[in-house]
Image 1: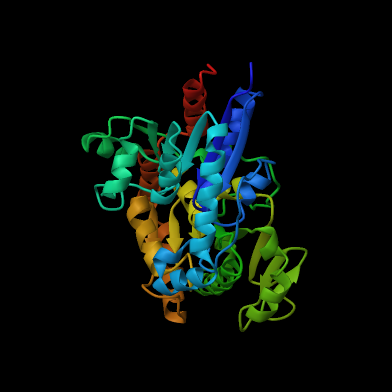
Image 2: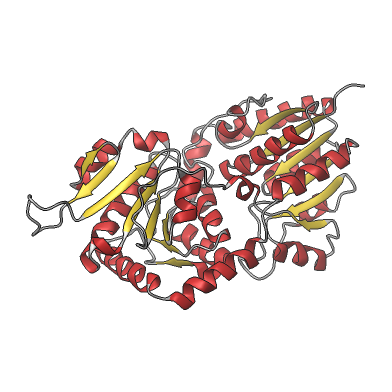
Length: 404
């Protein structure tokens, strides 16, 4: 009996990430399944790292997929060949779709439309859409038609509130999926050299370069402001960085007036003597994201999915807007609506010295508010539900393929 085949379509880096966790679970549950992918945004690194074949052309656009934040980014994407690229990707999907028994589309209108046009059965995971933003999810009429199609087997959502909202709107096949990445957010015992009984603040500057480097520079400036408000002995800082950012640490340290020794950044506040140990220290890690998140007391976040995961496990978030293209005030403000009380955004424009001072004060106030910290734990579970999304979705895919 020939192996069953599934094609994954996704339009966004976060969407690729979500799908990659479903793929890993599918491999554990069914060794014979054949899989391929079409990432519509970026190079599809999440798929390539799993050796999943990519069936069409890929290209990183100037906006990084965040052109909805600023029309100028969309214009730059057009100049870089966005329309032609998307057309070639659609042709690749349509030409190969007949080879697959099932399609899984992760993302918004674009990926769902690709799946619908194949005329193949498909499963939808609208991972980037949520009723939590506005209280009700207002679906594009075309997307609504696609999701109500008889070929759409199920519509998975990232939160239970959205699943209930869609069911009220007549999409009976909507069901809670969750955040697949949460299933593998497991500490591995990385030694973070933490001092006991001192709050740890995690720094998450994002993963897309060069924006992540700009974000991290802002976070270093914020750490200095925090140290001015509260003695360093009261806090400890750990940064979860991607490899491209780690490679630039030395240059970043020099530009911001920090010292770098073996991935440890140190900063002496004005007035401290050279004989005394530096007042501020940040230990930077390449491979300790889960451990840093779990052991953190508070997160300074300038990212998307990483911040969602932090909220899901009950962490409070302080956000400061950057230059973008992703982490602008518009993005941070939307995150605040999605994440509820767990996320606080300071400032309405790219962070200035005054905004950083306000953010530093808010960090100190937040860590001293035990009632608020307890509410964040409750809010995370209410918003994102329990882990298990990758298995919930994977088992449904196997059932649709007749493999269970």
